[in-house]
Every structure is written in C-alpha cells, then in structure tokens.
Length: 381
Image (cartoon, rainbow, N blue to C red):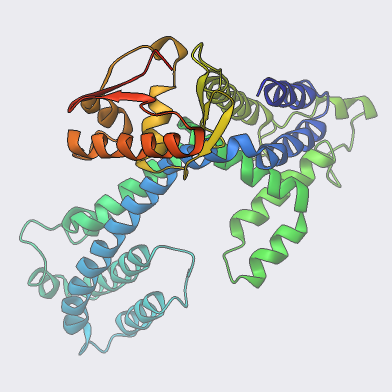
C-alpha cells in the first residue's frame, strides 16, 4: 500500500507545478487515468460515488412526480386553449407538443420541457386576453403573469429543479463532485474531438462538450486566437492564464488544482486506513479488506466481498489497537449500516459461519469467542 501512495504522490507532484496550463491539464489527465488503474482504489471510488448515485436517485424520483403533476395541469390548459383561433396560441400549443415529444431541447428534463411549453401557452393566452379563462384551472392565488408561476403551483417540479441546482452546486463542494469534474476534464483533454464525435453517435446533447473543447483549444494555444495577439509582443503569450482569462468558462487551472488536491488527499487518507487494516496482529490473525482475506497463522481464508461476514471482519480489524476489544454486536451493526435493524442473533450466526470456515480451512477452532451479544478474538490462539 505504501508503494501505491508513493506512486500517487509522484503523479500528483508531476502536474501541479507545471509552468504551462496545457502541461498542467495533460498531467492531470495522466493522474486521473492512474486512479482508474489502481485496484486498491476501486472499492474506495465506488463508495465515494455513492453520494452521486443517491443524488441522482432523488432527482429522478422527483422528476417522475413532476412529470405526472405537469401533465395533469397541461391537460386542463390545453382544453382551455383548444378552441382559440389566434395564431400565437396555436403556435404555442404546437410547440408544447414538440417539447413533450423531445423534438425541442431533448437534453432537458422532461418536466423542464413541459414547463416551458405550458409557459408559452399561458403567455400567449394572457396576451390575447384569455387570462380569466386560465384562472379557472389554476389555484386561486396563482399570478398568471409571474414567470415563476409553475414553480409556485407545482411542488414536485419545484423540488426537482431545486435538487438539480443543488447537484450542480455539489460538484464544486463535495469530493465525489470534484472527482466527477476531474473525470470529465481527463476525457476532454485526452480525446478532444473524438469525445465530441462519440457524443454525437450516442445522440446526446453536444453543447456542453463543445464549450469544454473550446476551453481546451484556448489552453493548448496559450490563449492564442487569430486576433488575440495583434499589437502584442511574443512575450505577452506568457501572460495567459486559464485561471483569469474571461474566455475560459470551465477549465480554470486554479479550480482544478483545488479539485485535484481534495481528491488526492481523500484517496491518500482512505489508502492509509487500508494500510492500517492489513497490519498483522500479535496473535498472528489479520484481515486484508482489499482482498477480503482473513489470515490466521499464515493461512488465508477468502470471504465474499461486501457481505455481512466481510463487513463484520473489516470493522473488527479496522484498528490494530482494538483487536483485544470485546465487540458488542449492536456496535458492529451501527458501524455497518445504522439504518438496518440488525439483531444480535444475526451477528451470532455470521460469526458462527466464520468460525466454521476457520476450523475447516485453518484447523483452528474457536478463533472468535462469542456470547449472545458480543464477540472477541480468542487471545489463546
């Protein structure tokens, strides 16, 4: 584990002090690629990105409710607009259908498209003098001329919008968000236009990628554009900094230096914990959480990773100073998953199964001493 940490430190130091911003971002790309190649980081990264997964799930749950909510309201509004012959209203209705069918802004959330489509119809009807007609299908206190009308009267849509905004904010503040930023930067700087073509083939919106690639090209050329240096000496090129150049919208070096530092320090901290976990105990018993192997007097016993047996062993061996400790099952359960209602009987069964494995594969009975409520390592082994 020590060699892994040294390698990470070497790659990190190699890019952070680069003179040119291009050298910084290419070195950052090499560093991010290295993270993906280190097997000891796989479980750490998966655990880290659970934060993103939970956020996505919350947004998707809110989106489903928002679509149902907006669809129900749109039916009432469409009924009110159906017999109106004004061109502006009919155009707005036609556009609403295109929004709903993903013909306009398919990259938007469905609820956002429905909201925009309805907003257009409402504005057209108010302009044509049908505001009172709309009020019959809207809440009494609704202000039909207010731009945030649908946010005010559709709570699920308002929630989804707030969560989406929060998600964007957390990319800057949460470690998982910083790591995601580094992944996108590495893909952009390594693949360039190939990344854009890949997005096109997958039918995805390319607007964001095109903006990122524009940043990339400016950084590669040290800010040089056809008219950028007219009237300047060649030495002025050294003045370019992605951190301060107003044309750079995303890839500011100072921001990405901060993202990389936070992610690097997080991984070093987590790897250091693993380094402690795998230290053998004085009794000749240790647990390698990375390989999910219990080592008893030199004999290795493999357990399936991320099971209750695995997590029970991982927790007991997480600190070598706690090895003589008597662990109450309730404490192990709390550390394993505070939201699951584990019983003492379940943990008694987990350790009974572990003891059977040790007896068969290492020839040692009663490696763990268990009561109805606790467990500890047998000091006589």
